[in-house]
Amino acid sequence: EIVLTQSPGTLSLSPGERATLSCRASQSVNNNYLAWYQQKPGQAPRLLIYDASSRATGIPDRFSGSGSGTYFTLTISRLEPEDFAVYYCQQFGNSPLWTFGQGTKVEIK
Amino acid sequence: QITLKESGPTLVKPTQTLTLTCSFSGFSISTSGVGVGWIRQSPGKALEWLALIYWDNDKRYSPSLKTRLTITKDTSKNQVVLTMTNMDPVDTATYSCAHTRRYFRGSGWAYYFDYWGQGSLVTVAS
Image (tube, each protein chain N blue to C red):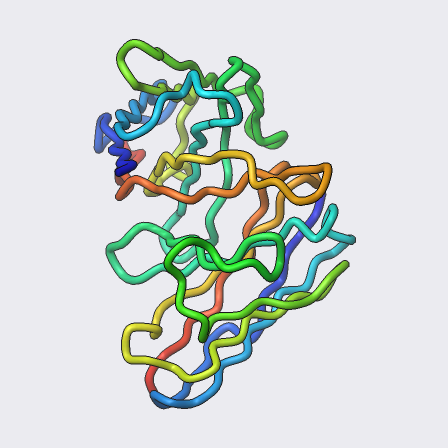
């Protein structure tokens, strides 16, 4: 069973700063089928990045994803006030078919 | 515009069966490549995928919960139903349904959850 481990658990940054979030898989992610989601309190998750580096529809270009195999990153180039949220990585294809990381909270410093 | 909404009981007793309904609009689950999945989130814990049903009625379940889950669809009603048997307090969580479709890359494809419902909080207690 594949396990996704996200780090750090919490990231304290100021608006305008760069955020780098990590997601490490316990085994290679099938075809780099990895996604990133953003979740704000009381809201449903929002798909940001899929296939490790492709932005979903309507996602600003300050969000970018990279990585392959077992190590992936989500970068927010300049944090906007609306970007403070919890971010989850998710893989498709290994067992279980869909697996999520435990999340990284990006909070205002 | 794709929307999904979960409905069902907010409180169930241990050992009971939970039945949740996902009502959706803006897409047809009979369209090739489309699916609807269920994901839950326990308080303070990570998202956990439970089950998914595809347009062709293919069904997939989380291995750890497979014996307790059943997912079905009613195409005419635009609904997907999840049942979970033998509920336990550890199953207390917000249960969400989500739309997925094929994301093609080269000769392959993946499925990601691109539209989600708001979720339905289910508490398991006697």
